[in-house]
Image (cartoon, rainbow, N blue to C red; front, side, top):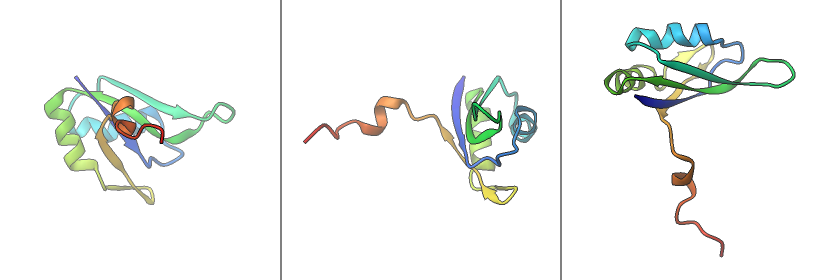
Length: 90
């Protein structure tokens, strides 16, 4: 099972619309969209879990694809520690 980050989603995206988009490439195991606390609308990003080979196919097919008027960003989740590693305080 691989977790992917999906960014630049339209603000009116729903779990159902995102699942329909990704299900072309395989079975979507889980979807977590970041939502605004007050309005409940999508903040423009989320996380999707799929099997490894299906996730790679989804990344190849959807990364850069325009949905609405925004190009999607789809890649494997970056573990939180990996981003800032090696940049300690100076």
